[in-house]
Length: 308
Image (cartoon, rainbow, N blue to C red; front, top):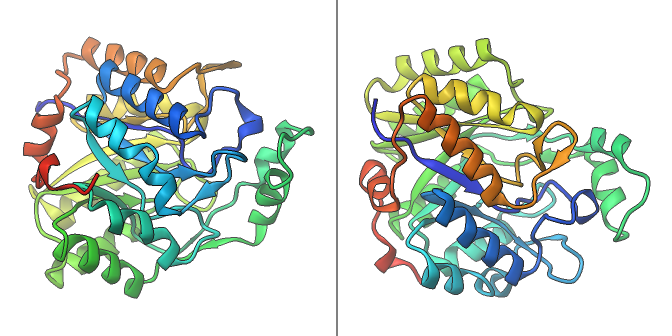
C-alpha cells in the first residue's frame, strides 16, 4: 500500500468554545495547535477561522491572515482552507479567505444538505458566549447550500484561476455522483482526493458497511484516478480511521471532527489525536507521508505559490 496521508482539522466551525477548553479559537492557539499537529505527523492542516474574542466561526480575511503566515513559516505542512466555512455564511463570505490566501488546497463539499447540530445541546446547559446555544438550536432548520452553480464557482475561481487542488468532501453516495458529473464536464481532473465524511446528522452514518459502499461506488466512477480518506465525526473517529487505513486509504483527525481522545476524556490538543492515529496506522504497517510526499501524491502546486 502507498504511504498514508494524515490530515488534521484544527478547529472547524461546528464545536463551540463551551464544549472544550482545548478547542483553539484565537490566532495564537490555532497557530500553536497547527504546528503541533504537523510536528506529530500531519501532512495536511485543514483550517477554518474564528472570531478571537467569542470563538464564533468567521469568514474574515484578517482572521485567516492572523495565523496563516505564522503556520507557513513554522512548518512545511500543506495548508488546506475550508470553502465550507459555516452553514450560516453566504458563498461570497465563505470564499473570501481562500481567495485572498491562494492556498495549495481547499476543501469542497459536494452538495447541499441538512447539517443538524442541535443534538449536541443535550450535553450542556451553561455557555461561555450568548451565540452558542442559538447557533446549535437553530440548526434544526439549517441547510448547508452548495448547489452545482456554487461548486462550479469554487472549482473555477480557486481551481482553474488559482491552481488550488481540492479535498472533495462527500457526505453521502450522491455526492460521488455529483463529483463524477464535474469530472465529465472537465472541471475536475486526476488525481482526485476524496474525503468520505461520515457521522454528520444529515449525511451518511459512520458504519463499516457504508464505507465499503462508498469506496465501491468511487471505484466504479473513478477507477485508478482517485485516492480516498475518511473522517468520522464523533466517537467513531478512530475506529473508522483504522478501518480506512487497513483498506489502503488515508485518514483525517482533529478537534473539528471530534473533541475526545477516549471515551469521556477530552483531547488536550490536535497533536494528541495525530499521535494516536499515527501509532494506529503504523501498527498496520503503513508509512506516514511527509508534506512533500503528500504534495506529489495529490498534484499540488507547491507552497511557494501561496499568498501568505
